[in-house]
Image 1 (cartoon, helix red, strand yellow):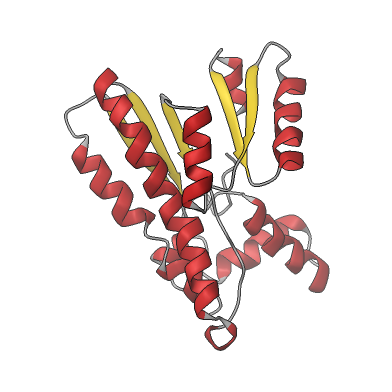
Image 2 (image 1 turned 180 degrees about the vertical axis):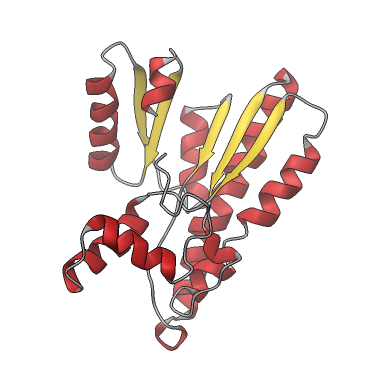
Length: 204
């Protein structure tokens, strides 16, 4: 967000709560006083939340789909409601927003759609079955990339990103195993949760 703001782009921050949205907007504004940034509090894991966001922001040149729910849990403790919540948050949010905003991008023949996903979709973990199974961003992003082939609209999939859920996992290792942050990331890497060559989590 900060890098986009520095280029002069009009940045819209979306989040579930007014407080967290305002905090994110303040961070961007502090880093870039001339930033054109504002926030919209709307839960993109619901159809109503997506409609609210698209009502306030009817078009976009760059869409970053990073609505995510992350929680390690074994299958025996995972209810049907848990699975459906993950599906709405991790999959349908990106589907709904891409479906709307990409129409305008194609009409203008320029745009970028970025999916922030997880390697758990390909590299299954026993405590992340729910997370990996419904991380359908791989199929969605590849299908959309094929759809816009030959245009100036690009669809990108980015994995293993240092977002809140990943940070929480690393922090838990730091707390319970007396690891440094660097050491905790190496533990995660050795457990095959990271397959990128850089062996760390990129930051958005």
